[in-house]
Amino acid sequence: MLVLSQAIRDRYRCPDHIATYNLVGALDEKPGFFRFGSETLYGRRSNGRENFVENGNDDQIPGALAKVENASSLPFDVDEIVSNLQLERYLDSRVDRAFLKQLYYWFRPLTNQAIRKRVQRFHARKWQSTTFPHWPVDTTVEDLCEGLLLRGMQARGVTQVPFIWFWPRGASACVLMTHDVEGNVGKEFCAELLKIDHAFDLPAAYEVVPEERYRVDPAFRESLEDAGAEIVVQDLNHDGKLYDDKSEFLHRMERINGYAREFGASGFRAAVLYRNPEWYDALHFAYDMSIPNVAHLDPQRGGCCTVMPFFVGSVLELPVTTTQDYTLLHILNDWSIDLWKDQIARILKKNGLISFIVHPDYIAQERALSVYRALLQHLSDLRQKNALWFALPKEINNWWRARSQMTIARKGSGWQIEGEGAENAVLAFARNERGKLTYQFAGSHATA
Image 1 (cartoon, helix red, strand yellow):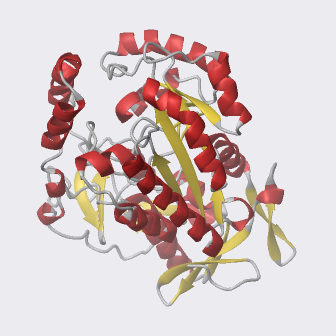
Image 2 (spheres, rainbow, N blue to C red):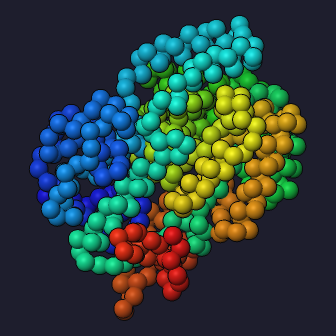
Image 3 (tube, rainbow, N blue to C red):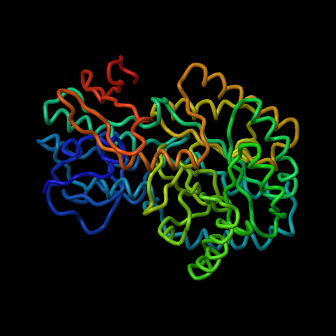
């Protein structure tokens, strides 16, 4: 059966025939982990369950799928596999974790920050034994799409494929800075943080909690907007219970959506990155920023296994692709930017979204602030060496939506990009260079 992969088409915006493949056989009823080449995947297959395992630990996956004779034939549905990863459908039941979370939040008011740090470190103590998703950055979705595009090129005997470059004006990657304001300490520090970011010419979004934590008054919102920041709604009251119950979730979302209208906000983030993308149809927002790339150290484990934006229904997800500042400083007890530098380098290799969560509440002290300044200096240095796009989330949302509607069409002996916003888009080519996929802009040398 000939199938058009929406996942490959969405990633590359290439001609449709390049994103097609033959689905061989009927798929099994139950999904499982398996390996395709070097990639760990989760979903249903059509050639038996003998290589399925119960979890994603690499050392328990027997081996690669047997090669199919036709390079454009596959024993699994590409879109199903990608969706399973992006929406974290590979995770076990959340029942036990929900009970532990309720217990933690019941005791939380009776504890201080030092005790909470010990509890959080205890919760994260076995994180290094979790091998899937891959720490510190998981690019399974990118690796799979790149590999399948290359297979398709080989099957068709073509050496290059035109596509719409990932970012506007040929940027090599995108940098997104977000600041979750969790309490009055963070709110009071926002004025200073705005000055620091401005000194590095860094736009940022501020995620504000509408109820209980502090007053999100018009003067506070205006101070952020006048400085060029973007306001994002963060949960309702940051009690960690938004996704505990569907009916309560829908009730809270009515109020949250109301705050979106009041604040003029187009983006949302859930507290503590608790999430359930299956319920996103209740979000009256253009985009969400609640799904981590890899979440070994977060209260809710998992990860979307991609460093690119992706749609969940009509909502655009902007994944969190780097470790949060609190996790770095207080769980890992790492007061350098070495981990951030490593993650940035890995995301750059995939031309992805380099997104951060840095809390004004946690960097108000000089030691933490010096780490943040070091990060900003590193990003500034990279900006000089690479064509990085520093953007607000609403700008990324506008671009990704525009790009999703653009097409590539023949023009004489060449290609052109068509659609609204095409003047900001760049034509690129994916090339087969001796069995390796490389990218280059039209009329230039290879970029990767």
